[in-house]
Length: 373
Image (cartoon, rainbow, N blue to C red; front, side):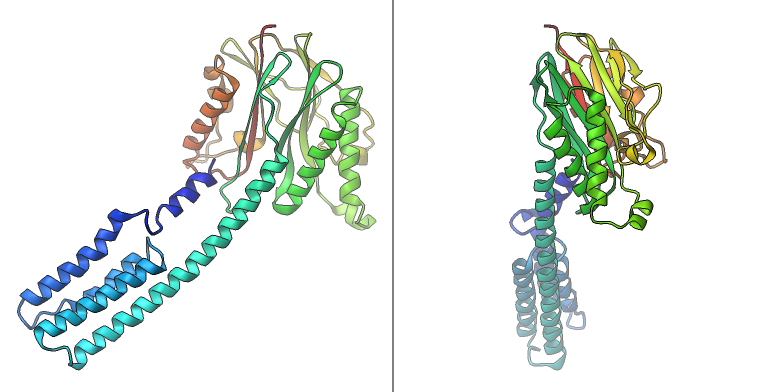
């Protein structure tokens, strides 16, 4: 995940977690006191004490910043007393300046910490919403071993519309959905929730995969159009790219329908084969609008030991610093022999190294291996 490490890094700079950094302003205060007392009277280092609270605010909270400011003020008073100039206007002005700087730094800490708490709450709500939408995939379903991965984008509170789900059917097969709703934020989350809900409600009882695709398209179009006028419907661009799969327990094949989504990758013995349909259908949300009443199913071999990778374009369109896309088709074959969960762990690590931790778009991946029965 991208957000997790960023959040932990920020929290590690709060009071009580950075004892080594506290030494810096403390050492500065002690050094200024000693030097200012020992050097000739015409040399004054007291003004440097303002750096103590100013440095502390960079890594600590309001209390520690206030403490460092108080110590700096006490140090300035000590210097004035030892030199016998505590009552002079110069020392009093330096003390006043230290107090003002400390108050400003503490105020900055209070405002910053309040904003961080609000942002943490937003992140928590976003993470809960995402976990509710993307329910964990089952580790096993019939002869299949399954793992799912969701990587949120770098933006702080935005959630994308990447989604996946699985459902067990009554005729001994497992159905999968992976998709990407256009846009991000609340609108994308709403549309993703709609698609996931429609899939979970219908996937287990739809007689055929094409009927399921028609159902998803109709449900999607109905929901986004029910409150809009005809003109708004004509100009609206809500849609979702989707791949639907049905994997029978007792037949070594995979049936799929692709609606504008990147093709799954089949890994077998170190070789990679994209399961590209002969003709990809329009994305969900456009089908009924263009009079599509049926969807063609493509069937591919999926034998024991084979591994399927389903993914969204957030993976293959992730760019590094030189603008190069992530080479999933080149990297994936080297992970063929691993467990699906291990494959996704390796893919996540490799992808984040490629983009140097800055993922520009949400990404979702599902790995499915057929086991020998």
